[in-house]
Amino acid sequence: MGGISIVLVIIVAFLAGMEGILDEFQFHQPLVACTLIGIVTGHPTEGIILGGSLQMIALGWANVGAAVAPDAALASVASAIIMVKGLGPGTDVQTAISTSIALAVPLSVAGLFLTMLCRTIAIPMVHFMDAAAEKGNFRGVELWQILAICLQGVRIAIPAAMLCMVPADAVTSMLQAMPEWLAGGMAVGGGMVAAVGYAMVINMMATAEVWPFFVLGFVLACIGDLTLIALGAIGVSLALIYVGLKEVAKQGGGSGGGSGDPLGDILNDY
Image (cartoon, rainbow, N blue to C red; front, side, top):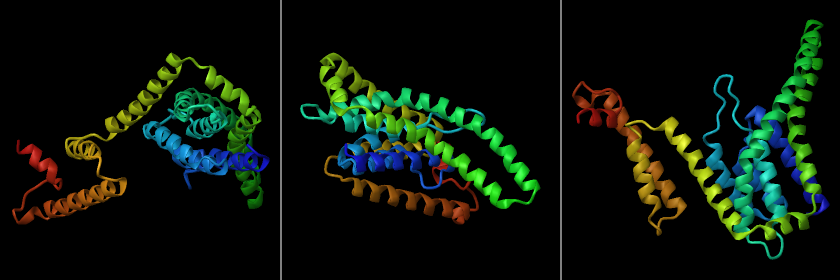
């Protein structure tokens, strides 16, 4: 990893850290962060594969009340850097990706400690902003707000820089020295983590009205001749059909009845 690549990785990490709080451009999402790191390091394909796998896990991560979700920013950035470092000569690509996926969850938990530390440091900044507001110093309020957000970016940028300093040979040697049973276990574990993340999403979204769409989606995905574009077109078509039926149901469909949910009305009839 060259000097320019390291600088670009640190910039991506900084943006991902800020976006973990801002949620504006979604740089902290695994699919975005891993893909960007893959591009700047010359491994775009591997970055997309890793980001897509981690995104399935992060779909089930959400802040609910006072419960803070695992840190997707640190998990994405650190896993991508470890994967890139491990893509050396003689190293199996799948092993490097599976190992990075398996490390994502403990890294996300470590990220919780870092964000908690940053939020603790930001408490005095709020008081400084209050003092500036009392004096009518709006520039001072903006300055402290920017510093607080930059603090969240630094909490990811510093670990990213430290990982970039680790020699690639050390990571490659570690992966090559990994016994076959451990590499296989990491691959299975990585797949299980992604499955659990998707199950969490289904658990939050699943209702009697949407289960038919889940089933139909899994069946269509098994058809090898269908590309992602074809599956996307089918999904959009089903959504438009559902919205059209819902509008008809709201209007009563000429019968003056219906709850406004066509599939719900059909299932209730049984």
